[in-house]
Image (cartoon, rainbow, N blue to C red; front, side, top):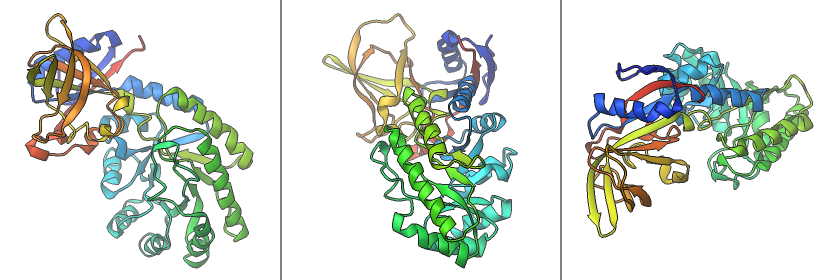
Length: 396
């Protein structure tokens, strides 16, 4: 059964998946003219993904990376399912706290923080963060000395990910002992564990084992320095809901007891796209069309200055489905442009589509990761205000 009360946030329960196209048409017809794209968030997908995480990683607590998608309904659902949160800024912290989530459920997982953000974390009770430099120790010592710390180390090899992070973040092997000594024995702060991140969209499961082995070496250095026993291992992110996820989980689950036989070790992670990527669908309208020979060019009401900005780097993950208001016709070579006056604003180039008309819909699936959150107001198109409709589908 479907609700027809399409407010900005609409809760629709028990929608069979084969009715999703009808739901999309209904929302478009009742509330959205061309020029007004919208999202649909399927909370049942989020539930299934949490079940998948819990099955694959029974001993790893997820701290969802808020930067990936800060939709309040998503954050609330994840909190209700038992997730904690990885925040990188003052605003992200407040976004989570304003939903009634406890500050104890937040890690301030940014190794380099502005002083004002550190002060705010102290004021609101976020007492868990990362660091990878001596100056960061000094800032934390002065402005948030009760904070617990994780030493962020550089992953041994992040060439197996689509977006490596090691160039910007993580202490090098030769920096680890001086940093631990300075943070604990000089500044008197509490370093309670180690953090690493192999890079976004990991492609090689074996790099997790290598990173866990390096984390073990850091724990050993801490023991050598007489630092109180560290108890937390943060394995970062890099996860997607694909078959590779199961391989990564298997590698991690084997590596942890090999290098950390202590049953009291607490393991956490910072998944981002794993939870929202497949849960969000973006619906756009055809607002323009031009035929050039055998090729058709379309303009839609979203583009690279909105939800498609990050997909320039991972567009292969996005699924496209046209919804025409008439019976389908010839398949044509097509290009889809966004609405701005930038000639680079091309969403999809040289793809096969049935010929569409003005006001027809083009639906983009798996659009929940780093999409709306990266939107801008470039050229006067406000991609930050794209509404989200909340639904719940059954498993059929």
